[in-house]
Image 1: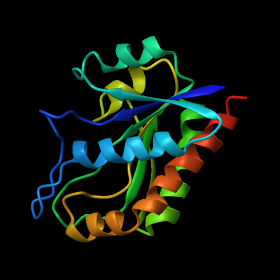
Image 2 (image 1 turned 135 degrees about the vertical axis):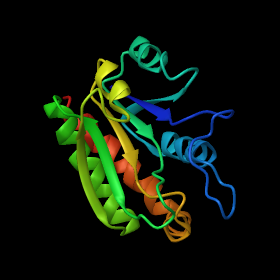
Image 3 (image 1 turned 180 degrees about the vertical axis):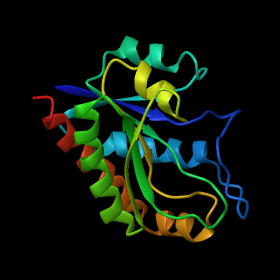
Length: 177
């Protein structure tokens, strides 16, 4: 059975981006999302990962020896940017392949603007995690949490979002058969 490390972006005392209208943080949203995904995935062992420190995160993940990694995040920019994107390490062919799987499922689930998959180097934001993990790693940014409409879309389509991650994880695992 393949293993997916499901990383909850940020942590309780450093919660990431926050919606200015209702105060919902990236950490709170993604912790609940991760629990739901973990309970639904079949045929793949999902290991939920919490961050101690950003610098120790790749090592903490590598110790689990997962086949692949999905880090749950939400984008934020200017309260009006919108859309879905998935980041992967620019030198990882497998990362690119599984990023396409996840991107397609997330776009189908939320119906937001398809911002595409984005190749990142170690110098780019998020690149440290993408480069330093031994297994192919993705950073999922399904919507902009600081955009009230994007957040409402994600909340209204939470079941579809959970299903999208679940199906993507199951399909991505097949890439490692």
